Amino acid sequence: QEQFPSWIQIPVQFRIRSRPCLVAYKCIHYPGPSPTQLFFFHLASRSSDLMATCIVASIMSIGRLATALCSAILGALHKLSALPHIEEEHVGVLPSMVEAELPHLPEDLLVQILSRLEIPDLLRASSVCSSWHSAYTTLHSLGQYKRHQTPCLFYTSESAGKNVGCIYSLAEQRTYKITLPDPPIRDRYLIGSSDGWLVTIDDKCEMHLLNPVTREQMALPPVITMEQVNPTYDESGAIVKYENRSQFWHDGVMFSSRSMGSIISPRWQQLFLTGRAFVFSETSTGKLLVVLIRNPFGQLSFARVGDDEWDYLPEYGRYEDCTYKDGLLYAVTTLGEIHAIDLSGPIAMVKVVMGKVMDIGDGDRNTYILHAPWGDVLQIWKTEEDDYIHPSEDDYDAILKNTASIEVYKSDLVEEKLVKINRLQDHVLFVGHNQTLCLRAEEFPSLKANHAYFTDDSQNWITEFKNNRRDIGVFNLEDNSRDELGSPQLWSNWPSPVWITPSLAKLNLILDM
Image: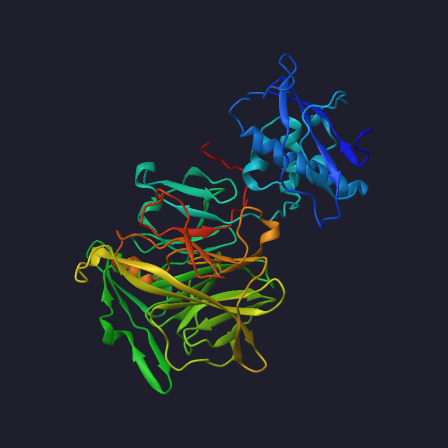
């Protein structure tokens, strides 16, 4: 400190499984906007050379845990006692050590510390000792855990088993495997992901909400409660086929699913009835609202968790994506129209807030909508192109789908036009069968600014060619280049992987380390 008076030195001694460990690190002041997320330090046992790394029990990835804890401790101390912002610089073990039993920190301080950890580190920390677990329980029961999570890729793997889901962490670049409740996750179609919830439909056409982190699962209303779905039963009472009786008017012309071969088996109903699904926390009631974009005409059905049947919007269709804000559902069509829909009353009210921006839709383009952190309503256009692993275009197994471009537009709701945005600066996009996201890269150091993380959500492609390679990667919005997410490929091609933002919906989380 005499040589470097601006440094703060905070040595800590604590115990892991009764083994004493010393932590030493140093910090320097800097005028940045937030504490650094990265810390580098040494752990040493009392009986060993202080410069040696301490090997700790396998209950946690201790290097990463301690790294995150040190950053969180300083962030919490700054909040509680107005310490200046800091930036870390490693110096090794300090000559003089002030001892403190970290597990016996006041619970309110521990709660502040734990609230700054992402879920994997939070759960590791809760396993250190009883006082830390008590602080974790308090944090969860009081609803104070608001930490934004880095999105992860949810997928399945044939080698892992039919009931095992895999969560690939972009922050840690590692995979967690979780055994999930029946029906087997590999037999389900993943049709949506929002706020930590997956929406799935199985081979019997039963739909569920599933939180893969907590393993909590809720049944959704049966598909036969949709007005357009008419089941046919055999003598035993089992459903053998469905008739989809959807109708849709567009520009004075009525389209009917009956003209498209509407009688299908439960297996095909699973694949073709529902295009996309979303889960929102309803402003007026706090209940979970599930919204479906149904095939074949992109119409909306919706239900709240606990409802017995689905409701729907009969007059509108061709929807591609939805978002929710201030009690209104915003839905974008394949022609770029934006509708604001109030579902809180007995009758859904629809207002067209932006007219169509094109006359003909593009079958190779997916359109997404979101509310940006700075307030604008954005449309994202992802265009795909076909590629072939060998020259024969008649071999469907040889066809590959590749993302050719991703374009970002601001929706000018006054002039009713789109304004192209060439750069997202320090923001990141996530598109696919998830709720479309736009995040600040500064809050998520492992993500690349001005990039779009995408998964394959071309429904016809996914359902008709279940074994073909999935188009998943990271797209550079500045130069239109792309990187693969991982090599070798971690995931099975079916069900198609989706982005998920981990969430603690209940307490009993079990991760297979």
